[in-house]
Image (cartoon, rainbow, N blue to C red):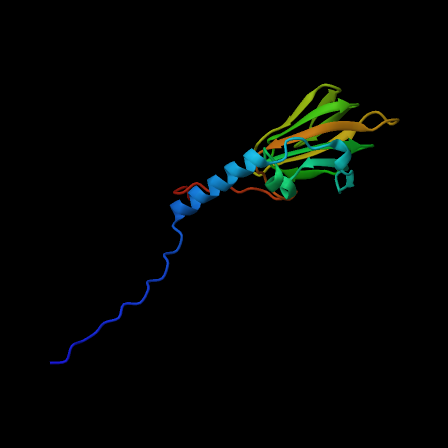
Amino acid sequence: MVERVIERGREPEPEETLSAYTFRFFEQKAKTLREGVVVIKGKDVRWEQNRQAVIKPYIMPGNWAKLGSPEWTIFINHIKTHSGKHVHQGGLGIFVLEGRGYTVIDGERYDWEKDDLIILPVKPGGCEHQHFNLDQFSYLRWHGKICGYTEPTCNLKATVHIKGDNR
């Protein structure tokens, strides 16, 4: 009788499970929060011209990985006459540091001045808005803050589909 010898090879490593990935993701996030940047010096942040205004972007998605409190967007905005009209989701708080003016949100005008807080509403499809400076001799200056992730580009409209609703 012939004896059979079966050689067992090494089994491949299992792929990372979704739960293992999730734990690793949150461990890395916690490490970033513990070790991230705590102070952002104004002198280290450059002013940038974008299509809306001149901004000083303190916290943007591009530097979230280095910060002790990521997933916020915080910037200072200078507007000489007006911003561009644009559409994006609300959830944005704008604290007026200097100046007076108004914002048109979906066709309705809202006046404001120094020390006021403007809140863009969260609405299906976002909100169309534009900011105006009423002082022709100085810049309007405000601080914008978005907590969490919102749409990455202007003019992107959200569509909400409810399962089972065929209207």
